Length: 447
Image (cartoon, rainbow, N blue to C red; front, side):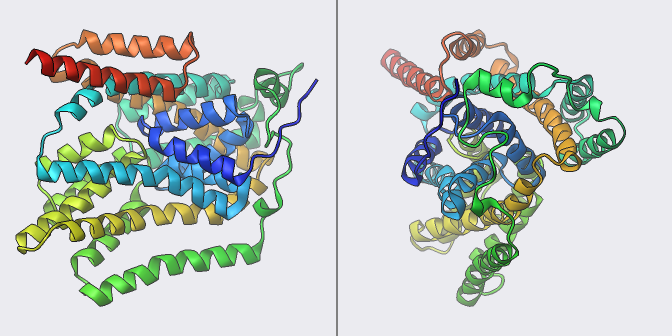
């Protein structure tokens, strides 16, 4: 017996996206896992296959994958308003949090309570990343070739440090060739149960299921595509023109607008791939902040909700703050203006990529010529998530060159909570934050 899913209103979805924006810790891997757990497994707003189809497209784009995925899913459910709300609410809370932390940092420079909370959050985030690799891997690595691609992706990133775009392109080409000559290398034989049946049996029918037709707004329309591209161009050009007119082509805000647009277009492979470029430009080229301030900003960015690339808000804030102090003026308004400029020009391209490209992606569902390369890319994504877990494991479990047993205990406890107790990512993050506050209180009482 199947149950019919009730339509989800825009208001109901907006409440979910708002809550998600405040608790989306864990970087791209943790956030992708959170979206999969909440939308696919718990709420059943879409099937596993629809989710992975959207994820595959987002992994091909420059910019924050999890934010783009949220935008895509919001658009799929409620059109352009849904996409703007989902993507905006995924970003706005982290802008507020990081701006507040940057303000405290600029005034006092020390965050003992937050440092204690973040110390417990980091091993919990490691456990979330490990669960993401396991959950996505067990549903996608269904043939030996896909398993081999996941292993190759892990080695390419973790051992050989190859650029992520090259790994993605290579995986896509392998998928394309396999689809042409040996489709069975990508498609597991399932004689008795289809993939759709498996997904439905595991979780129940989804609102947007494997064979559900795309809604009218998600169908390709040349008129809508042209209108989207026009609005996207105006949203980029008009604010830049205002900044140039008010401060000159080489004015501080105009420089930030152009620099962070380049950052948005070059950030293939996630924030870690582009952060060295951000640091080089912000510290060495433009002197917006010092190298030590940049490192502190990275630490804050890794442990706040939202995409890790949101560290650009800290860079912009400190750039506006430091330049105003050097000029002998009040730093607050320049710092806040710099935050708005950096966030706008960093995330605007992502909205354009999704709202313009998603109808093309929806039209490709069921097309093996498009789906096969994306299946291969999904396998590489599993390897990427595993390599990210390894990246986190070093500083979390071996801080200052010494093994930290308490961090290992937190990782194990968080894994047990997710596997055995079926805790959501939100519950794990909340428990870790509460433990961090308790540790800070005990430490202060004993000092």
